[in-house]
Image 1: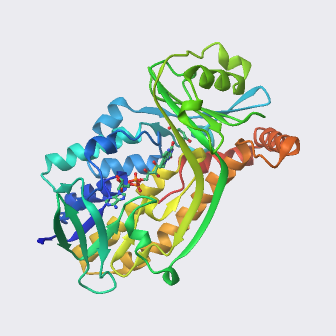
Image 2: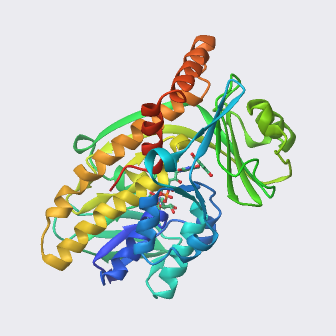
Length: 392
Ligand code: FAD
Ligand code: DHB
């Protein structure tokens, strides 16, 4: 058994764990990060693409926003297509803020580079990680690496290990409440080195199913179509993907759509999930370990960042001022913001997808809602305010 000691043991080297580690390091608080997989595996996962202003500000505070500002694409609006119309939500006009299009992969790469430059310890390929004794004042994390058992003694454990990680699962059933909705469809996403169909994102409602046109740069597109839950990647040739995408976009967009070979293709199921509370003694759940939103509102990564903000502030108060007020308020503060994003993501998902059981009636209701949205200043303000992110 090899023993280590740190102030905060972080399980999970996704954006939540890495960002927390980076903010703590800036404040002189020591942390060790563990991940089940290796660095290349983590960087190979293609996920979110839209950063709220609050997320950008937090990355700036962590000192990892230089490349984001050089290469990211600031957007001051996005479009919704429905009923062969293409309508714009002017987020700058209605919410006074922009969002930044910059991939989660790049955020993660920047955070990993900063951590390596600071010489902080991340253990990759750590098997069987388990948070332990967090209901006492001597918590620790156990794990195995290359057949050797390790133990990290610490003051606090941050469970940043995603939806399937061990942290939330370690909590006894009676101590946690879980709220869940599983949607009857998934998203098939591709990356292709073709110029994006438009300078701004297009979210499309169509009787055959949802589609989303996003991007990673001016030469790289990220496109999604709603698919069946039991669809396999092999069912979706590039030709089939482009055919479905084109059918779901309004005519006026087709002239600027460039097709090309995909170099990444994946299917993600859609789910809403919240675990309450987000703190158990000296264990704190952060990001996807505590909650999942369907991707339609572009909120998953941004929620992980607001959790990190609340937890980091609490830890800073604990070590800097000897006050536990921030840590004691963590779960309630984080959950208040989480539930508002869960609601927005559920609403966007409900308004834009084809649901198997609602038939033509459901489609007409969605079109009426969208028509109303674009005729009402109040509704525009609501969608814009939520899309740019509620304050934290
Ligand atoms: P994660 O990024 O999941 O990181 C958790 C880390 O914990 C991982 O590195 C994992 O390897 C590690 N871990 C897990 N188990 C263990 C263990 N036993 N021991 C040690 N480490 C462990 N959001 C959007 O806004 N838009 C999108 O398009 C979008 N697409 C997505 C597609 C998929 C397939 C998924 C799963 C999520 C998607 N999301 C999207 C959501 C967004 O990516 C997440 O909200 C975000 O990654 C949350 O960050 P996190 O650090 O909390 O969790
Ligand atoms: C992307 C993903 C989303 O879920 C979204 O709402 C917007 C953009 C993306 O991957 O680019």
